Length: 241
Image (cartoon, rainbow, N blue to C red; front, top):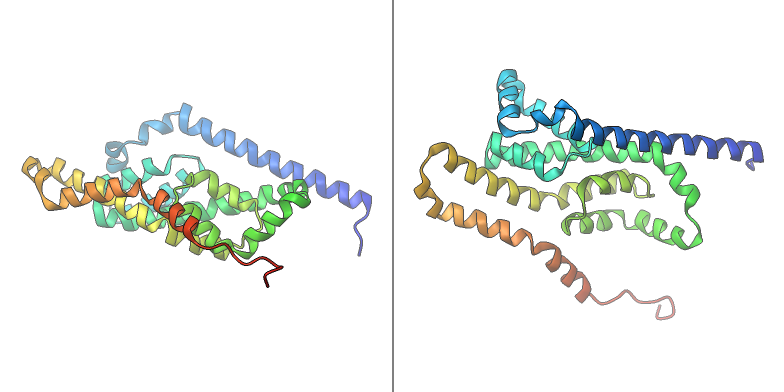
């Protein structure tokens, strides 16, 4: 059944309203985090005291806070650092990863629900082939962008505007953020342990040198990934097939 002009106009209007809601949500999220008392709670001490108060439920509450923080455009490095400082290197990694996955999934679904229709209406023939390519190679695309440290929160919402399948996005994100998350939480968690113990001689320990090495190495991961990707032979053209 062909879409009538009235139906098409109605669909465009709905798409515009949805994307305006998305833009308002983004602006309000930034205002809440930057210009309200909420920012006073975004410290290791304040958040740690709050989590101590909830006791047994602290890990679950932190995961929920992380997920909401991602949707409110809080920097992922800030949330990850807080998780490592509060829970330590290893449990910090676990809780941060689950929080990041929950937040990334929620942000993706918000972008898909409110922005995809409008995004699709703007895609011409030139951009459609890229949108189709992301749909076909969703997992590899998401994994690559995560490994080269593409900005976390903008990518969460942005991928929702594309045709990538949620399954590909979810698993590409889960695998792609694992290495960077572990390195950062291990580094922060190790320094936190020394700070709390007051045993500054531990600064010369193997664990500290290992964590610093991993942390420095993390900055070279994007270059390594890009070099490996660049060294791969291009796929055969249609004529060659």
